[in-house]
Image 1 (cartoon, rainbow, N blue to C red):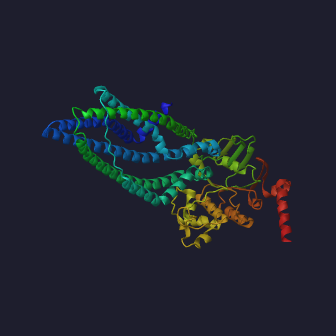
Image 2: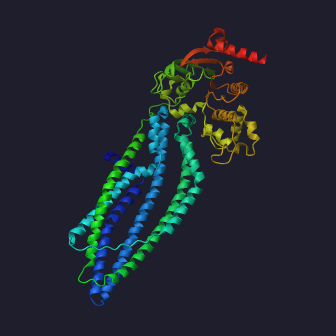
Image 3: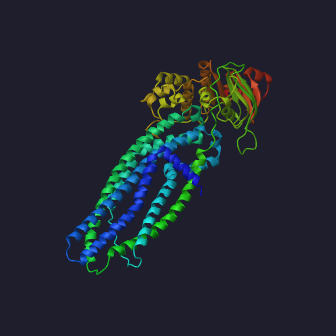
Length: 599
């Protein structure tokens, strides 16, 4: 059994929530020795009752019995109160610990290599640790705490058995009062709270899913949205947590009250026992009860001891998974530089770049060599699977496991801080995200470092993509929610979503605009119109436009043809037409098809 993991988790909890460790140890010690005092009080009480029965009326014995009953009542109330306080403080601290652990997991997800998100084993690993994080993190420590409590109790029982005659007869009195109605009401209150929290939980679930989902990872990273959405999730989580803690606090007070009533019933029943044992002669009935109870409790404690040991081993397996995840290697940023300000002969340079996905036999891109000037407009053309998207992921720094070099302003991008690098790129992927928030939010997510209520910049970006007129026809305009996941909203068509995603990229206002087939859901004419608009409004920016269509390519300064991961041709439209290569053949075929359709 790896107790190093147990030490690691204990140190972690001690660092984050010292009160959880201290309160748990305190309660374990008190609750561990409480059975001993309970048995001693019971023994003396029953012996006093026995003496009271044997002798004539003796007021001193009567008062002793009353004092012992009061002591038992106080002890029972104390034990019950400490037990429920322990549960309440543990629940409260675990909710706070959950918040801390989830934030740490999300931070880890934002820093590990993006390529891991394509690994099925990584997702299996993530799914194993992704539920009840704090509860399962705390379980081995709770098991050890229970182990300590049981050992203390066993020690006290052993002392009793050693100090009392083992040959005494056995007698036991147990009192229980079921409280089904009260617990039924408590259960209904919990259900009511869960219904009220459903919309909040749904939004939290969505926010958490986009922070760790494979399909969302690249856009969240490209727009540096991890911090923004983490804070948004944190706010929702705290709102839900406050409601839960408030209800739990009320319920634990109710439980303490009901157990107090239960103890009062025990006093009345104990008084009634006086009459049942009145005929006993020369018997110390307390000794009988204590020995019997000590034997039964010792046996039960030893059974629980073995169960605790088994639970520790099982829970440590989960802890190992969580520890391995938190120890995943991150990209070091300590020695990386800020974005270079110097000039170079070319703005972007790729030298012999080759990339291969894990478990694949052939590289996705091979020996890519490209030079791009600042402000140049580039069209990358190729069939599906030709390596266009992989090339872009390498170019913007999402994939760093490539061979060769990629330079920006003369500096290798692997030496540039991730946040500095990403600020220079505005990217729209083919499988861009469709946020179920307002239209204004969907556009402003392009740059959460700016004022999210900067409506002028939002409108300007949407006008460039042609979505502004559509938005202005809606009753709520830019405050209209999209989809019905969080609030009732409207559904956009595929083309409208793509224009909205384009607006988000334009709103980012970065030096380099990368469009990975963003107009796939638009017709050719709309694609050409948007591309022309981008070229006219982004004349100072570098634009890299990826498509399997050839209709818009002729407006680019340079066209790059890709096939099976390699660059087959590159040059301007006129140059490639003059060369009469693959580009010329595809373009000529398209012109012939248009002529045929027109005639």
